Structure formats: C-alpha cells, structure tokens
Length: 229
Ligand code: SAM
Image (cartoon, rainbow, N blue to C red; front, side, top):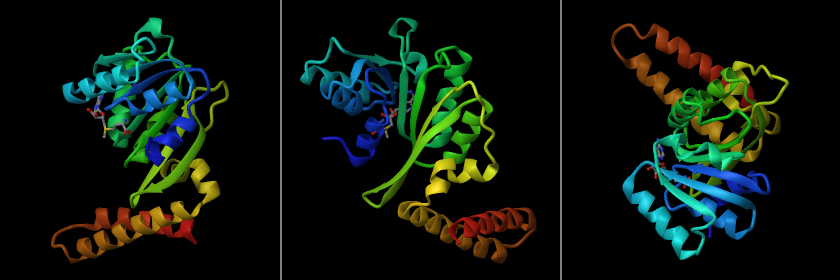
C-alpha cells in the first residue's frame, strides 16, 4: 500500500516506462508500479547502505529481482546506458538536493535529456523549477496534495522542442498550480505567508541593518498576498 503522495507520483509515470527511482529507500514505488504492470523495467538507486538493503529485500520479497535492479549509487550514477531509462522519479527530498542530483547527472551524462522527470520535492520547489528552466525543461504537469498535515508538490518535466520561458512568479508558485489555485494550494501559501509575516516581525525587532532582508521578505509577502487575493 503506497502513501497517497507516492500513489500520485506513480499515476504520473507513463505506462510501460523504463523507470529509475533515485533515493528509492524501500523501493516501494518501483515495486508497486511493477506489480501494477505499469513498468517494463526499473532501477532503484540508493546511496545509503541501510535503505539499499531494504530495497533489495522488498524486491526479493515480491519476486521482482528480474525486473527491478537495485543499485548502491550516488544519484543518477545508478543509471547505466544499457538501461534505456525513459522516466526518472526523485521523491521525498528537498528541492536543492534534487537539483544537485540532476545537475550531477547532467554533467556526467547520466541524463540523456529525453527522460520524463517526475519530481516530488518536500521543500525548495522554486530552486528546482529554476534548474529545470535553465536546462531547457518544460513543465508538463504539476500537482499539490496534503497527507498527514504535510503539503507536497509534484512536478513533471521533459525537454520539449519548444522552450517555455517561465516568469519568476511561475517558478515560485508553479505554472499549473498557479492556474488552478486549488484549496490545498491556498492552504500552503497561507502557511507560507504567516511564516514570512512572523519573520518580518522578528527582523523589525532585531538590531542592526536588516533593510535588505526586510525589503526581500516584504516583496515575497506582497507576491503571496497577490496570488491569494
Ligand atoms: N523516494 C522515497 C519516498 O519518496 O518515499 C524515499 C524518500 S527518503 C526521505 C530519501 C532517500 O533518498 C533516502 O533513502 C536517502 O538515502 C536517499 N538519498 C539521498 N541522497 C541521495 C543520493 N544522492 N543518491 C541516492 N539516494 C539518495
């Protein structure tokens, strides 16, 4: 039984993908998708020994050793050319870490550029959208959901022939999430607004020259208020 978060990620993986799930932990996602017969093959990558062993165990328990290869590797180094990967999932990490993993994979050619990326950052979504934009990716789909009081965003991206230029506002809020402005989206940005308003109070109380920080936080508050209005 997948979490609602991973279930939604799984729905966004195209049928008959050859999937690389990076930071797979227990390999729950590739195992579930393989059992649903959604994947042709899969690689589960883990950089930490404990989760790597857990992934191997989960794959073995489900008799999927032939279909899912578990590799102990840093980021996209888990991918080999012969895997012919068509989709990559990186979930449950901060946006900056996902960005670093993509950047390293880009630089050492583990990313071919034609894979569909299904990314689920826990925080730092803008950092990730900034990277995608500067590397010629188009955002194809987005989702936002709440589970156990936490709010998660999912970003699906691919390199398309036509390049889309995203505004700063779209990179912060998500181009599709911004269009939809769902109830969960409102809840997330209400929270973010409150957080920034508290920071502003602290900054205004603090000694020393806080002008630059105050101006930045005020700018963000205004942006969020505009989106929520
Ligand atoms: N992807 C699963 C999910 O969404 O439920 C597991 C998320 S878990 C919080 C993050 C996992 O990423 C950990 O098991 C961690 O060891 C792994 N990880 C962190 N950095 C990594 C890297 N550079 N390469 C591969 N795995 C990494």
